[in-house]
Amino acid sequence: MHILEIMKSHPGSSTEAAIPLVQGIEACFDCAQATVACADACLAEADPTPLARCIRINGECADIAHATGRLLSRRLPSNPLIWERQLEACAVVTRMCAEECEKHAKAHAHCRVCAEACRKCEAACNALLSAYRPTADTVV
Figure 1 (cartoon, rainbow, N blue to C red):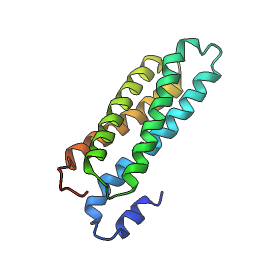
Figure 2 (figure 1 turned 120 degrees about the horizontal axis):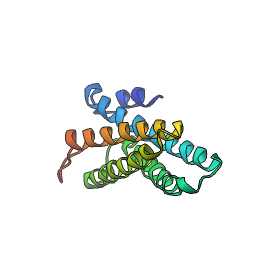
Figure 3 (figure 1 turned 90 degrees about the horizontal axis):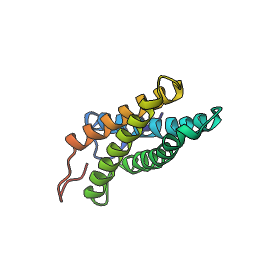
């Protein structure tokens, strides 16, 4: 990915501050891809009926993780509260998706891998929330 190079060259940003942000962006996009692929693999199973909840939450997680990655890629929020709420939503949905995938992980390797990607994204979102908890005048 080229995001680290772009963040390093972003006017007014430090390389040190960019690294956690880049890790969050990459975790969000990786999670989005993993959840789409997991839902597809669930649908390809001989009987996808028991995986219906997993398929649905994978789709929701993919959309939120992708939107979060895009939002974070903009580097300068128009309103820091938007970032905070989006990171909170992403942390919640990735936790829920991981929990659902973990229920199926022994029987379906794709669910195990998806749960891992979701947990990594959840951790990255929580780390960004801790590091960059915005205030009304904060620009990350």
